[in-house]
Each structure stands twice: as structure tokens, then as C-alpha cells.
Length: 294
Length: 218
Image 1: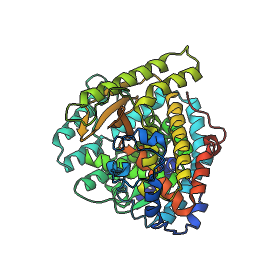
Image 2 (image 1 turned 180 degrees about the vertical axis):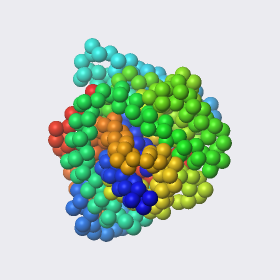
Image 3 (image 1 turned 45 degrees about the vertical axis):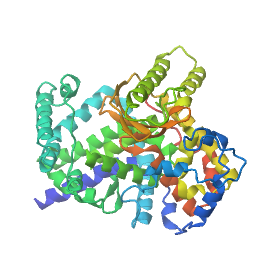
Image 4 (image 1 turned 180 degrees about the horizontal axis):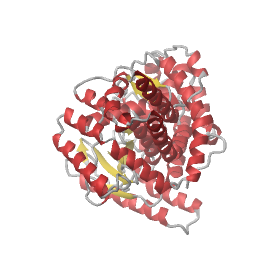
């Protein structure tokens, strides 16, 4: 029993590595020296003096400043664009403080290196061998099989109707959809999925994200979602497969399959980001906030 | 956990699409808007999106011409300069000299446009589902779903009433705001470096940071 536990945990870590590698970029070197320069308040004063000179294009498109001549150093009390669009002033939740920032950056670098040198080549080979429709079907099977996670977490949040819809989807996709290979519930019956996990359940009842944590292999997470891995693991049917090697193989296979489907997106993201760690961190937290709110 | 990762990847993908599909009535200035602007904005977004998709489906058209026409369609309804300014953010804006501000906006507008156009090339006939918009003051948010093989990508176009009609000033992809996600990165860059370094970063060709030998599936 203990042995099984250890192997399962190893499996989780290995598979986590697969996926997390997908998440993390930024050279590890960045983690090492990270001077806490606080580019303080010089900003605000300069901000005000700079305002008169915004480029014409900018002014032209701003409804609050109909046609301010760019030349004048006017100190109008005209409302500023930044005030009109103040929704961007609030930091992303859980990101204002980043106590593990140094470690997170380092781990992001590790994961990214792993992605570039190990996971990506492996997934590329796999992608070459297996047709995309097949890979999509495999992904659907795993999604279908993880129904207990969605069902239980919907119930825990008292989202009874959604739990019912998920049950209906599971029944339809398991039977008509041939064990989940296809998704007739969505395509034919317009039954939308309602994915929920334990992290969302905790968030639903008011748990904050704690702080951001980049997990080895698994990538961006936070204290709340990290803790939530465990209950969801027990709801994942793969956990109950007797043969450890089969279970491990399935988990790793699932992650490899997923990676092969999203590789291009990740590559594009990796290319566009100025600071991959910061981008991944904020995107993760924003996405989780949205999921919890739904 | 694995679900999160998948979500993350979807975010990445959507992020790419995000700069793309904004529509708006170019010369239809609604000005300050009571709760009746929503249909106009929805219609604007739809018209523009459909026009862009039409171009994308046209396989006969030369790529360069196509990109040109797409930009011609969307430029009137996306406020790229405002987006650039908002992305840098109030606190960071003042750290740049006026000349640097101008340069920043030029560079970032360029990047946003290029990024948008790059993303359109991955379009592969996915269907788009329009959902009802929501008005908040002089702003209208319109959600749009891109129906993919997997789960839909949820876009949220945020429009405001400019002097020259409705214009988009942000795009959310699966809940991730384009502006917010770039903003944090710029803040980080400026925390540890100078405005000159920020501008230098923006001037770097995107390809330079790519993985060598990357070849996409399509």
C-alpha cells in the first residue's frame, strides 16, 4: 500500500514535469540575482510632466481629450486616459506579493529547459507518428474519465444542475461516444461541460490563492491549487488502477498527448512574452480567478 | 492540476488569437452611450469579424495582400495607441521621457499588429459564436467564442466610445487580459532595468527568442 503511494506520487511528479515544462520559461540565471530596485515615485511626477506631450495618434483616439494640441504644455484638468481606464490599475490577485519570486523564476527556467530539451523533442516525435484526430480522441477519453473530479467539485459548490449536466455528459459520451473517444454530448446535444476542480471549490468558498508557486514539471500554481491536487488525485480513476506501471504510463501518456496538442501555442507564447515567468504567473492567476467566478 | 495546465495552454493559444478579431463601425460615433449601444457594438464586431474570416478563407489571395486588407479592416476599430499606453500603465508611463513614450507607442503598436496578423495565419475554419454584449458606462464588452476541437476559446472584446466611433481597447482570452498580462511584464522590466532597455527589448526581432527549429503543425 505504501509502495503504491510512493509510486503514485512519483507518477504525479513525472507527469507534472511533462506538463509543467510546458509552462515555464525564462533563464534560470534571472532567478539568481534579482535586485529589488523599486523604481519609486519619480514616476508620478514625470508622468504628469510627460502627459502634455502624448503623441497625436493617442490623443485623437481618446474620447476624453477631444483635440488637445500636442504642443501646449497645458495643465488642464482634463480627465486622463489612465483614469478613464482605471480597471488596469489593480494588480492581478495574488501577484502583488510574490514571496517565492526568486524560486519561481528559477523553477520556471528549469521547466522551460526541460521543455526545450526533453519534452518538446519527445512530443514532436509523438505528434509525427500519431494523427491529430487520434490525439484529440485520446484527450477526450482522459477528459471523460476524469468526470468524478468535475462531478464531486460541482456538488461541493452546490452547483447541482451542473453536476447533473456533467453526469449526463458522462453517460452520453461513455455510451454513444464510445468510452469518450467522441463527444456527442457537446456536438449533438449542446451539453456544455462545467469543469470544476478542488482548487476552484476552495476559491468558491473564499480561499485566496495564497501565493504563486511554480511546481517542478507541473508549472504555474499557487498555494491553494497546490493543496487541492491531493483530493482531486483521489477522484481520478487512474489512481485506482491496480498495476502501477499501467497507471504511470497512462498518466504520462495523457500528458504527452496533451502537450502534443498545445505545443504550437506554447511555442508562440514563449516567443511573444517579454518575461515568461511574469506572463505565465499572471495569466495563470487571471484564468483561475475567472474559473472560480463562473 | 493537469486541467490547469491544459487551461494554461489554451490561454496561450487564445492569447495569440486575441489581438486579432476586433470589429467596430468606423464612422458611427455613438458618443456617450445609454444602455442602447450594445446592439450597435455587437453588430460592428460581427461585421468586422466576418469580413476578416472571409479574407482568411480566401486561399487564393496573396498573403501580403491579405494581411494588408485585414489590417485595413480592423485598424479603425482597435485603438492600438491607447492599448499601448494602457499597457505600459500609469505608474510606468512617467518613467519614460516624452520622446521615449512616443517611441514606445510606435514600437508596441507595431508589435501588436504583427502579433495579430501572425495569429490569423493559424485560423483553420473554426466557427465563431457571438454572445450578448454588456454595457458599463461608455464601454461595451462583447464576448465571442471560438469553437475549436477542444473546448471553446472565450474572447472578450472591450470597446469604448471614442470620438471616431467604437474602438476596442483590450481583449481578454479565457479571462486573461492582454493589457494586464503585458503590463506586469513591463513593470518587471522597468523595475530591474531602464526605459532604454525596455525599448531595446521591444526592438528585438521576435524570431530571436524563438526555439531553434520550431516547426508548427499546420
